[in-house]
Length: 357
Ligand code: NAP
Ligand code: ZN
Image 1 (spheres, rainbow, N blue to C red):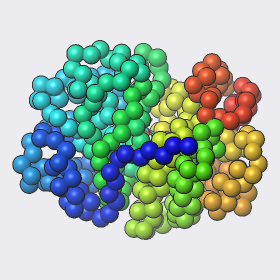
Image 2 (image 1 turned 60 degrees about the vertical axis):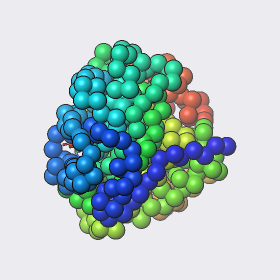
Image 3 (image 1 turned 180 degrees about the horizontal axis):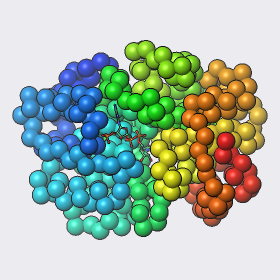
């Protein structure tokens, strides 16, 4: 068994201001990597630039990260980062800017490498990355993963390099500007990480420290999430569950719902958490260890699998996926041993297709 979680994490109100010294120790010129709007609206970008100005650390802002960031965007950022000679990256936002930050850090540290190195397993240097999450789903602030859109392959894929952020600064106040759908979708993403990590070939007593705690915390805010009556304490719990779920998948990886979700996001534009969540009830139903499944439901505070499935359906609504797409999706999972290895049992095409709720 192995436990490895190298990111320094702080989680508290005014986290960025309180830990400016930790940021200042990391580098001498920063590239802030973020999306178009949200980090300006929720105050996170302002908090970071205030601290950098106060510490006399020069920075540039790259705010061109789209949802489900592409390899092309990463290369565009590298060009600027190399020219500006930045030596660390600060990612602010949801999983998209945080994942992009990791890939950009790798490409800047290897200025002459072709984009192919992103998907080659040979170890390469990368710049230190600081992460400030503003959604409550991916846990990317603590995971070593970075998922990019590959337009050439019409899907999304995790890069081959494990890039752990050096520092993660969590402040739940940034969540308050997020729309209901963003909060729902990203919370369901965190839930999927917890479930797929607990019910996983690689799960063991060590790493279930993370998934068990996360499932319990998720169960504590679930009713308020459904009723849209979230309190400040709930926002903290949502961010906590998301981060701890990231630590869980760092040790186990995700499983079939994530694998099935990528073509749904690519072809239909369904947001990541929702695209995963529509397979979650079916994953539990198909999972062949009854005792472990019952434990997941118990930790979450559901009295039956039907209650769980109904809850998810009420939260997410329906997604229309054609049989043709679903069949292609199932075939691509079955053709890829890497996507099957985290599922502890054998699975048929019919079972994969029936996972869609
Ligand atoms: P996201 O794609 O980062 O952001 C979705 C939308 O939410 C964007 O429009 C963004 O606006 C907005 N937003 C972000 N924070 C906000 C806030 N506080 N208030 C208002 N709006 C806000 O969403 P995400 O679900 O967090 O990330 C999904 C990505 O992460 C996918 O590419 C997925 O594959 C990846 N992922 C990574 C891991 C991992 O371990 N690394 C795990 C799971 C998923 P702006 O564009 O203006 O910022
Ligand atoms: Zn996910």
